[in-house]
Length: 416
Image (cartoon, rainbow, N blue to C red; front, top):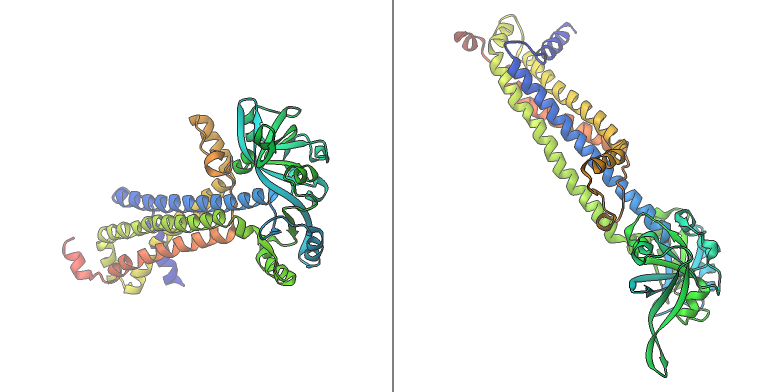
């Protein structure tokens, strides 16, 4: 016990700055700072990637659905029976029909392509959260026969319209008139504006009432498909397979993991690559400990020789320098974890402050799909980063400590 206390005391004392070894202490502090910065950056980046994935998933599912039943080659005429059949599955919480098609909205000389989705507001509440995204008006204004329309905030800015303004909706299905073939069109009143915070939806999606959409696209009593909400969205793939097997074919059943697979696959790939790259940065910072300890060993050759002549074993000498190297890694890692956690919890405020200071839009919704920078801190990832950094520091310490234990007292004292 006394020997262990002696080894820890000497090892920690070598970390303290002294006049003769000030440069060595400076190198030790630099190694700590390097590890702290690397751990800090890794934690913040992983948290931002987690938050980005979570926010993207929530915003997509706010206007999309967990699963969708649609026709193989066209609309679904018997959608009510299919919806009731799917509702028998224990994981299906609700279903809502929809009509979907492409069109173009026109306001004077301004026009924009849009994806038009016809919904029943009452049933839509069971599968999506459009009501929570409304910044003006409500979904209750979508009444069959009134020809009202809800548009995204970015689309409203593009067309220069707001609640109460009129828009003309053109669709690609043509009709024959005495003047020739002209596209089908209908005048709609903007009754509400929503903001999902995802540029793809805010710029390119519009909602109208289900009956109005069916008449516009000439579907009669048929719909494009049925959207389903599940009790556990992470089991969507298995539930879809079960429903498809029970229905026996004739319909196309998909889930959110397939409809938006490219988004989440790219996020996961980016997260993995960033983790590997930043882990290399942690490794480089940790291996700075090698040069630090090599200089310490060279500077302390006389001290090592004296301790050896006083009875210190090679194992004790190795332990002293292991304590010093690991202490550098642990202190740097703890500092990095503390500042990394604080940075991850306040990353949005930091980004907003930088945007105001630099007068630059660092997170553009047109580029990154989201208009803000969320972060989600996961404890298991923080522990994984901390343990990895400490292990790298330990590995970096072994060789210099071993070289110190091999120092021969007579050879070291010869030049003193």
